[in-house]
Image 1 (cartoon, helix red, strand yellow):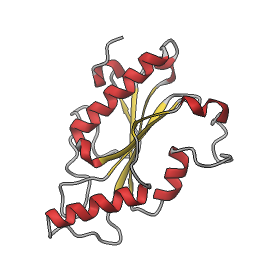
Image 2 (cartoon, rainbow, N blue to C red; image 1 turned 180 degrees about the vertical axis):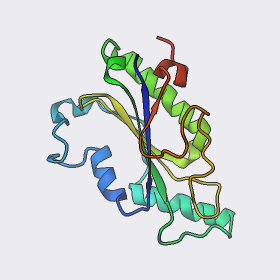
Image 3 (cartoon, helix red, strand yellow; image 1 turned 90 degrees about the horizontal axis):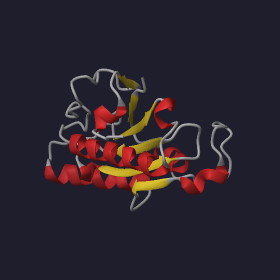
Image 4 (cartoon, rainbow, N blue to C red; image 1 turned 135 degrees about the vertical axis):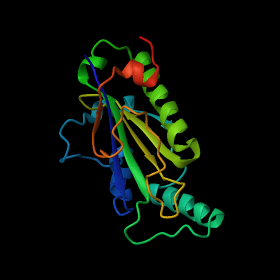
Length: 180
């Protein structure tokens, strides 16, 4: 049975530039990831295209949150954004057309927009140039004075305490409501 896979990684802001280079395919070579096939990179597509550099997107949202809530403090160790990967086990994609794959990721985006707020998401790019299709989605958490992650409401079957890799014991089509 195929599984949905969601990984949420708390970021403190430092790696924003490096992540942007990877997500947006701005490097000429990727020695750290031999699975990237640069000839297939043209098949990658955005569902949410960043309007500016990642760092600027993050700072803009933090400054807005601070204006709206003067108690919102950003400490040196504050989580400034969340780097998310959404995919499924390889067998889920084996017999899927490009259109079905795109529909899966659009529904996953809609799901996360409902959970974290569409305005908080500043990038969502689907990589089709690696072994398994996946979406990188980045957002700035809002709702707590310390810019934490506690306000994110995931379905009860997703273990909130595990913010590295979450393998959902459910078919991807059931989790995101995509019918195939």
